[in-house]
Amino acid sequence: MQIVQSVDRTLSILELLADYDDGLRIMEISDKVGLHKSTVHRLLSTLAYKGYVVQDLDTNKYKLTLKLFELGSKRIKDIDILSASKPYTKALMEKINEIVHLVIQDGNEIVYIDKVEADNTIRMASNIGKRSPMYSTSVGKAMLAFMEEDEVEEIWNNSEIEKFTEYTITDLDDLKDKLKEIRERGYSVDDQENELGVRCIGAPVFNRFGKVEGAISISGPTIRVTEEKVEEIAREVIKYANMISNELGYIK
Image: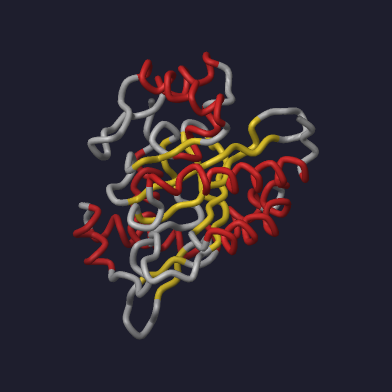
């Protein structure tokens, strides 16, 4: 893979600033990305000219603008699944009172394009636009389970397989066995595979052509989403995933 150094450096600055709502000064950025301040200044000047960052003249700190969000929104607004799912993800959240996520596939990963927060004291840390591996998430596995085997293998082979917790599946044959179970029962479980103390239950969403369009999930701490509740919650997740599929024109 050929890396364009200036582009790589520019993206590193954007990714850094995304973590600092109040912004950072040039010297702070320089220290954190390991670049000379003159290089950082040159790159920031270009980003400011293009409207991706703005400098606060009182603090001299650089902050992200909303331009990246606007670009992403142009991609998301054309995704029918987002508008079709809105009433159903909200209803599912109200039914279970746990956070609901909607994701789509992008390459070897899933991207969270919507979430409905629940009114709980313990909240889940997730953001729209967040990316996660397919093999270790309930939504990712729910989608993989209904893909062709060669597509599953291609995604696996092009993914960086990491053991996030002691429960993460890191063997392809083990994953295939799990995907077979998911196909048979219609739902998947991330049982602390991505994060200790968190359990997620997902189900696939299909388009009018019968292809996997995305997936939805219920996520919560294991003290609330207990093993005893998995099947009960799964029935609701499947039901609402099917409703979204129907909205997209899928007929089983």
